[in-house]
Image (cartoon, rainbow, N blue to C red; front, side, top):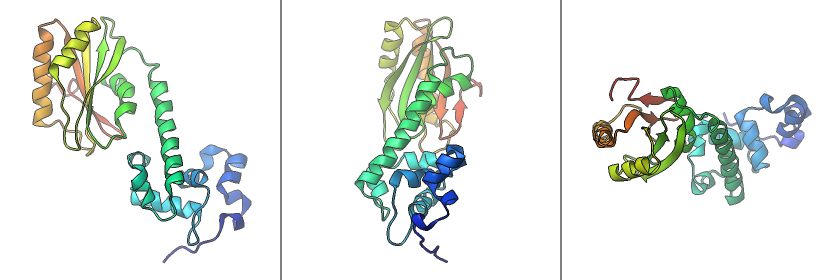
Length: 230
């Protein structure tokens, strides 16, 4: 049964998202209520909260899925124009950048979890594959995090020569490889395994160690090192 539309102005003050944030704090709000504050208004047939709930439900109530949408994707929802779509995208991007800044505090890579925490913010919301590397010194401190290549939905291209050039130029002692799987399937493909071995063979010529290859998903990861695939 369709939920009746009642204007937020007619809600109990404790239930209105803006007033609720002021009186109870931001943690008390649901994802839908936070999005409702961003979009400010709904339509004749539904409140801003109902519209936000509909958007979230369509994407499995998953903020990570929502962050992958384009402006045109968001505009497909009745009640969301370009201005509201831009506001939602801007808020989600700010959240991603905040997480990115927080993870840069981790300068030493000791485990696969450290590598994932550092690189994940750059990759988790992408609808396509990207390949990145972490260049480390002898103390496993990060010298540089560098973008290598971008692909389509089903694959990415990483140039071994570019990886080696970057590692040599920055006097790296070791490298962590990283790429994402937009599909959510974290298992390495045959191409992933072959590429890893190819890069490992090339790096050995320069006495540079490949210490891990991380495959990034929305909320988790796969580590070649942890799975003894290196």
